[in-house]
Length: 386
Ligand SMILES: *Cc1c(COP(=O)(O)O)cnc(C)c1O
Image (cartoon, rainbow, N blue to C red; front, side):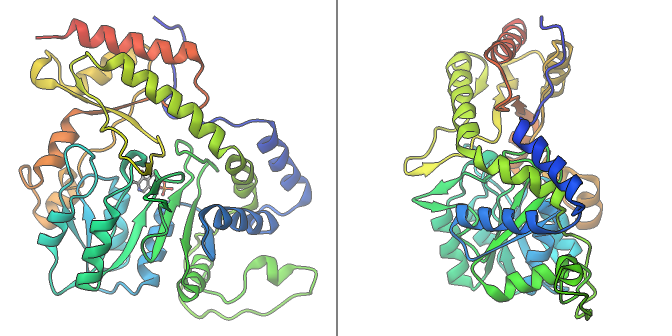
């Protein structure tokens, strides 16, 4: 057994990131300044969009995206039952009602057929989530949006590198939202980005992200002299700091290198686990690019003596950090209490919820780390066959 604990989602931070943060500290621009601007330009260019607005989280990006497209009280927004709770929480923040749709068992992504069943006169938008870095069926989602006149906000928290039929994730809908949280593919500690080709949406999100005032601090206190500002909305405090962008600028430069390493680990896991009592991640769809954000096994618990949670415990005892992505939204207390959701409402999301386990997939993993994960998973599963 390995001696030290292998942390799940350990980011790979190297000297260029460290030097850039130190440069920010020395320059005195800690808040939103030139590095945020540069990171926005680089990310917008990477995605091929007109506007990129850097924020302090993907949750903030999703919230502002819903405000920008005009979600109001009583509006319904369809979100997958299989996602992180933030995807649904933001609909409530914006004053709307989240309406859940089930996912496809194999891909874990939102099921367009169930989305269509959930559409009412009040439905204004849908938030597809590219689970684990695999693109949703965007042809089907965009066809529904067109048919029912819905806005689309993509939760691309897992999907910086994702592409679907030659088009980049986050550029299908009206606004695409990304996360740079410490465990994500591109990390700034905490951080997020909203991208769009709509200038009005971009302006509104930018203004709302900083108190609702019409000029940001960098412009206010820059070398052109002090400028007055006007509050035009009761805004939020969602802006990204230069200290965070300093990390992002260099993380983005290494995006392909890190992706290639995760792909290598992914393929090694697939080969190692193919005969165990698990369902492997769905095969990569042709003409798409998977972001390889989460390597998720679905445990064949019907043929195992242990539950998923007992498997997690055993992995931890073996010094391997693991994650669960996710417990379905409708199984959370708040969603059960407020909306009356219950077990049995979303069968595919529940099926995944009870079986899913994510293994370490950071580009920081050494070959020895990867072998330690493989050994632990193989030993535990083989010992627990029924
Ligand atoms: C991580 C995550 C978020 C939230 O991202 P933050 O940057 O932590 O706010 C939203 N949606 C999904 C699917 C996520 O995995």
